[in-house]
Image (cartoon, rainbow, N blue to C red; front, side, top):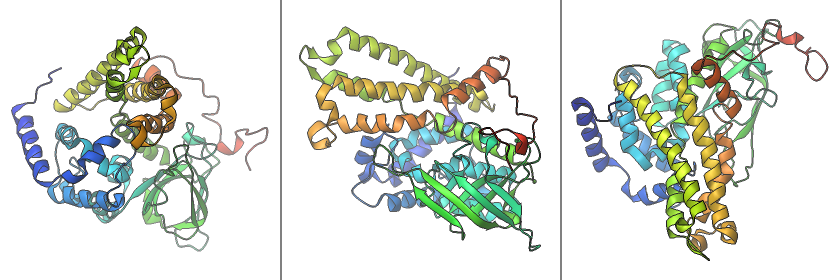
Length: 421
């Protein structure tokens, strides 16, 4: 691997640094840095949504909002490695894109691959500028890791309009409560095997019949939502791909999702190391304890492995190659490591670890927030178990799991002791 920028990459990096120095909202940087690693937008000095939209508009005007998207849709037209350089240099300011991450990282690439040209020109530019927020309507109460088992139905309207009528439920939908548009996978044919009877759509989240119920999380936030569809009408022009091609559409989204999430997980190692260096215990500084040093050393090795695995991907991008399923390793390791480190940091602080007031406990609230959010990192974008299967089958070449329902029509798969109607 070559870790040095090529002359062209170095020139682009200098260009980005100059632009950020002239345009970044520096007054927000202290707050944004305090929130790094928590997965939450920690702006209190002004309205967070307004700050996010303002930064998005500023970036879009210069082509940095979605650097590698085609210029025809409002992107920058930059190469994949230039996109990586932009993300590295944007640093803490990248948190101002959290509201748009699903649109930019998952929905947008799916629309570019599967939507018609008219739809792309209508929906992608406002997605880039932050004028429209998107969500991803995939998971259901009985179809999370087994996405192909979803039951939300889309049926042709009986009025001859060509529209589709959707009924069902989705769950764990991030930002659905503030989203303008959503990417939906629904079942259009229950008489064929489960992977074959799905179709992709995008829909206006303000459509009649869409009901959104926020889910209160352990950390006090309500990022996730339940979404109910009751006779929701979707025009056929908002279909993605052919009827029955929804599984292929969903794979486009999922591959982009795992790359986006896996590359954005902060493990909290640097914060834990800093805590150990300053925390006084009855026996002295925590860092002087051999057990503490042993833990930190093990995590330092993992952090180094994650760093160089990421650099291997960056090197591949620099050579014009497309990284493969080995990227699943990064998310699998980083998500569990993040949870372990947060638990360790709170244990290290003993009774002080329960304090949540930053005025009383410095960074204690940071580790509490990380711990309460960490389990979601091990589920979203592919659970640990799914990622292990991907690594085993597609990276190591091991035999696949036995899937007895793969060729069975969906309405004939036994569920809770009875067949589907």
